Structures are given as C-alpha cells and as structure tokens.
Image (cartoon, rainbow, N blue to C red; front, side):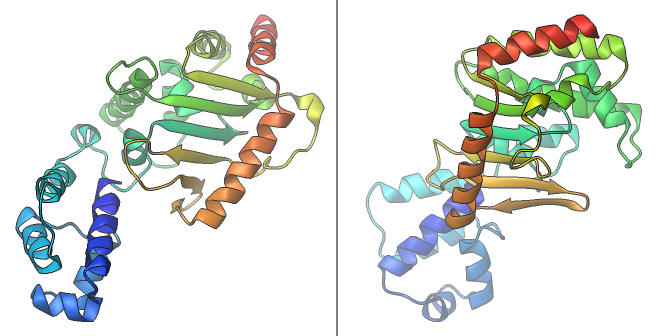
Length: 273
C-alpha cells in the first residue's frame, strides 16, 4: 500500500511538471516501462531515484523530506515477514487499513477467530503445512487482532456473518463453544460491530461472494476491495467497482441483525452447541 501511495504521488508530481512518461524516463536514465511500474506501485524505488525525480520535476521545500521519509518506509520489511509471509497477500493491506468491512458466509472472519478455531481452519487447507507453519499463521492472526484494542495502532471492524457460520462445526463442539464465547467478547469491543445474517432471511444479495473492504485513513488511496477465489485473490481499487461493493455491504447490514440482536443469537446457538 505504501508503495502504491508513493507511486501515485510521484506520478502526480510528474504530471504537475508537465512531463510525459516518454520525456521523463530518459531524463532519469530509465525506460518508460520502468517509470510506469514505479508509478503504478509494481516496482520499488530507492531514495537516490526519488531525489533525481524530485530534482527533474522541480520539487522543493518540505516535500523533499516527506517523500524521502516515505520512500524509506516503503523499503522497510513488514512485521509479517518474520513469520514467513510475503508482501503479496491480504495481511499487508490490512496492516495499513484503519477500517475493515467484511462479509462472509463460510467462516468466522480472521480478526474474530479464537486460536483453536483458527488452527482448525488452517489445518483443513489443501496446502500441506508443518506444525511450525501453523504456529506462525496463528501468531500472525493474534498479532492482527491486537489492533482491535490497540491505542497506538487502532483498527475498526464491521463484520456481517451468516448464521450458518455459527452452526458449522469447525474443530468440534468444544472448539465451537470457545469460538462462540470469543465472538460475544469481541462484539463488546468499541471498535467491533458484529452483524449476524439469520437463516430466516433466506436468500440475500452477496450470499455466494464473500468480500472485504479496506479503508486507509492514513493514506490517500481510497477504499480497496479484496476478494478471495480458489486460485488466489484479487485486489480492486477502481472506484466504480469499490462503490458497488460498498453498496452491497450496506444492503447486507440492512438485512442482518443489529449488534445486540446478533449477540443474543450467538448466545442461543452456543447454548445449543
């Protein structure tokens, strides 16, 4: 996300300078394709390259220091790398987000998963994992969840989950009872708004397509839509597509129970488990 943010700023500076890719790239001793990749966030750039760009684009004043600091931050490795995760998945996006809106009909959202439930989900993956890898994945999940109560790095979560998620036995009855109790505790947090879609609603829009919307309060990038599929995931930031997803999420919330009603339903399901 920071690389995308930096690339957008650099593109805007080039355009403000009245330079096309074809003119700016040779002045930087780069190809047009390299400069394009940097501006689109697909390739990194070091402080030397940014200094040269700012010089050619006529940038002056405090913006120099701000851009160089951002460039250094982009080059830093994310905390998740220590657990063996790369920079291409969901975690780096969420790490920069201030608000997550998630709709799911399959599992409890990762930010709300108890440890035993999370391990049960990881264990059924078609990708074989060692015990060490499972431990790392669980540790990453716990690290992510800490932001829901963090003072220094807060994260807000609004989740819509299907009632079937509460009733699907993942890991066995004991694991599910612990997970349902964890959901009740999490729902009491100020930064969590949990909505359950009752089975009595029947079919509803979005039933077959879980998705996540991320908002980045500290980065002027707009919202991003994240959708997983059997072969991987897609990250979408085109405003017209993101706007459709926001509308769909709002409609899902309108069909679902409010947070108090949702907790009451979770407690009833727990009593039956």
